Image 1 (tube, helix red, strand yellow):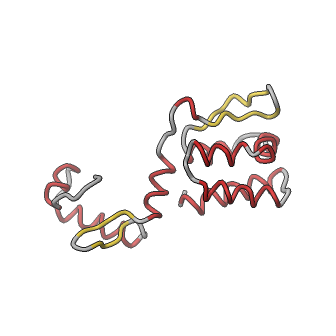
Image 2 (cartoon, one colour):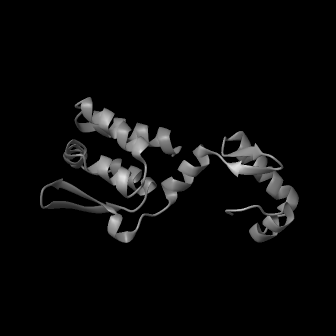
Length: 148
């Protein structure tokens, strides 16, 4: 929902009782996803990032992994979550290739619209990590930022 809505109407739209809705909302508040605002609730920045992690980018903005120039790895990510899943699996040379060319930074800045995470990738790049150490740094930073 992008605007104000009555709790009873909201629970009906979700197919929940008012009590069930309130239980879910209380749990979300405990997890830092909702905050009390005036007489209602709003999503926190953490919740927005969780949603962003699952939200697909436009088809033509997917991240296509390569191992080197003109050598596609045959996989692409259409969301932050897919990116994380693939970062766990792709050949580490692909991670090195893209990180040190600035490809990851560019994708997160432009396609995902997250310049904060792009800056985190720049910090990882300066550490000159390779192989599994690089994979771990990318994945750990992704999981911390997006609560994956």
